[in-house]
Image 1: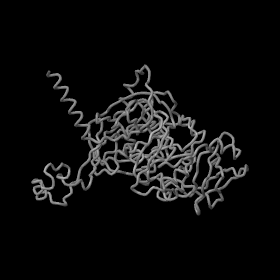
Image 2: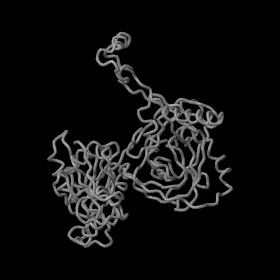
Image 3: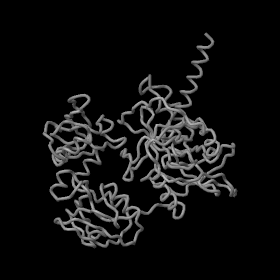
Image 4: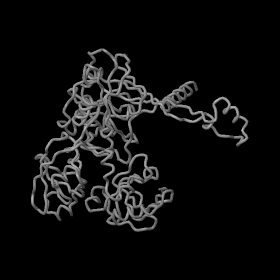
Length: 481
């Protein structure tokens, strides 16, 4: 009986701790996990851990949420509007008195130089009023934000101290990392400090819909809430990734930002406090098999220019809509993400050689790269994008290529390629891979049909989507615009 009570008490304490801390590793939904078989653990992990752990820090933040409302409003009114306690609360708290709420969260990071510069995730320290870091030796320091880059979810913070001999970690080469190699993750999952887990690299170049520069390392090393910002290291004790995302169901799949991508970001953050990226000034899309055949392109190489923005670099250089961009400075372009990353890495003001295919003839243009302005990019989205942004549902025409990619057998309708987090679409239950066949009883056969149907619905009215989900059959999802 005593054992049962102790067990219950421990469970209650764990639950309270979990509720108290808003741990910071965001989930990625709708990705199926595969269980890993038995594996041999190398004996070198203990030595590796001892080498790396002193550079890993526990990050604790405090964020003040303004206007939490009177305490009275958080309770029900069992006595209705004549509640005798109403006057009591108004007398002591005031009718319009608002209470601030301090939200605490936990995360991880690692020291990259003797000055105490620390790399972590942006979502770990975003909007934080206070940042404290704790070292493995127990020393605690306040820290300040040097710079943030929400596009890659990376941030650089610095320990507030005159000390210049902090233990730092070596950075490796994530491009040299191979699928199947052993890696080790270090961090503070669920607030449990200085935790080490090991696994292998499951895949590289994963796109999970978190931003325009997705290029994640997938690993089966256990990563849990609180691991965010911690290092993923190779067997040489070098950082090859920054642990960032997890599967919502916790089935052993985690994602890390490659260190080669992160390095260019935090070097700019340290030097300038912000990240500057190149801008070409075109709207683009991947080539489908049909488009490649139509334009006479082998192996779907290159990306199609769908729009050239007036007055921007591509327009000034002479690039036109329907051009197919094949190369940037001699490097082949295969996907829109390739092009986005290549241009982003070019310094503002530099001339870059862009090879395009126009009317089955190759042409080369010298383009002077401009600075990418995210606000400007957002305002340049083409027709119909407003409906996608409003509902958070991104759709594509159901081409044979898309059907193969999402493993669906349908040929009619539009397919959902991404659903924004915390959007109306996600809240209603729309999933990536869903096929939208009707909206409010109007047939949907292409993206233009979707845009037109959603555009007809007034704000506050219902949107009923007749959907085919390969795992569940037909269903209707209702949301309010």
